[in-house]
Amino acid sequence: MKLYELVGRDKTKGFSPFVWRIKMALAHKGLDYELVPLHFTEIKDALSFADSKTVPVLVDGDHAVSDSWDIACYLEDRYPGKPSLFNDRPAAKLFHYQLAQTLLMPLFRTIVADIFKVIDDQDKEYFRATREPRIKCTIEQAGEDLEESLMIFKGNLWPYSQFFKSDDYIGGDNPVYQDYALYGMFLWARATSSKKIVDDEDPIANWIMRMDQCFGGIGGQVQKIK
Amino acid sequence: MKLYELVGRDKTKGFSPFVWRIKMALAHKGLDYELVPLHFTEIKDALSFADSKTVPVLVDGDHAVSDSWDIACYLEDRYPGKPSLFNDRPAAKLFHYQLAQTLLMPLFRTIVADIFKVIDDQDKEYFRATREPRIKCTIEQAGEDLEESLMIFKGNLWPYSQFFKSDDYIGGDNPVYQDYALYGMFLWARATSSKKIVDDEDPIANWIMRMDQCFGGIGGQVQKIK
Image (tube, rainbow over all chains, first blue to last red):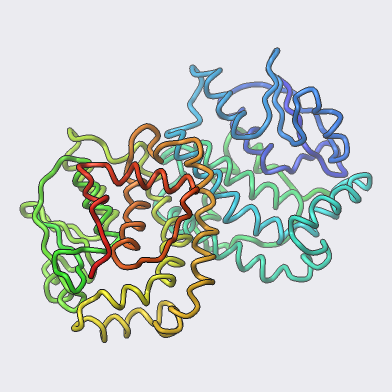
């Protein structure tokens, strides 16, 4: 299998939250794969074969699958004998929309100026042109207003803080796809930003430490891109 | 079994979103029960036996259980031979926190002035004293600012609109506890307010129609309290 991912200036360092979900999902399934690193400006040409404009794209033999949710479902259906990614697939699907709205968007505003610093020079013009309309301000303005977006993000962590007071993983005793989707978001921030986005005493911090140890620590090894 | 519920001026009409979850859950399990109606100001004395200050409280033989989540878990564990309320209990637990933050609070601000009109006269002073600190304004001010809170509420429906484009229930082919928790919120609004809180073309509207038909239409029969 080949997994196409987005990288920063350092071509060995992927940071997309959507790719991280799939890296964790592939590890959960115990499947080997080769990573294909792409800069933002390389994606369009490189992934036209899969009719996709975004990472991740997974190629498995003759199959090319795009969109992280579709890839997760593909892996589950194609490899049913491997550990299941889902306790409950519909609940996981709803979760991925909830995550996108309540956490990914506010976090993007919080770290967009940091992401801008770690992407390759050839990507900067493209990134600005495509991302500034999404945040409805310049990258520099978002960097200055980050206290507000960080406050919104932290506020929206409340359901997870409550949940992790009593439960180890969203999957219960073991992580499932929802854990990987949420964790991928924290790896995105860790790879691009040095901002403290979770308080030490928050139960989420303990869950992150547990996730950091999964699968030989593939997430735990992530450091900020230099 | 006895289920203690909150009622409006009309003692036969319950409206608590948390009680509705349990009414639906009891119907899902096929369990019979007797309703005990309470006004806000009767709750403290009536439920002191269960060490609870809120509805619902369920009494099943020698057991008194309070808190809607704990009651759902009690029913699931006590009646394992009946249809299961959960596809995945941890995901349902996380869901109930997500629902509280993103939808119940904004909807409460939207309909609080309407709720105030349908509760019993003896409850009005108590309701104002306890609820105004929660919304950080007077009930009348919330009634005037409802466009903003309604906009927030409708915006936060986005994950559900997306989900119900392709899926019939959060439980997949059949409703589960998350469906009842979400539906209970819509019944709360329907029983207390005439505001249109879901657009006709929103896929959520179709899901509500499906829920309205569950268990002989116990939710579908709910009308605004006069």
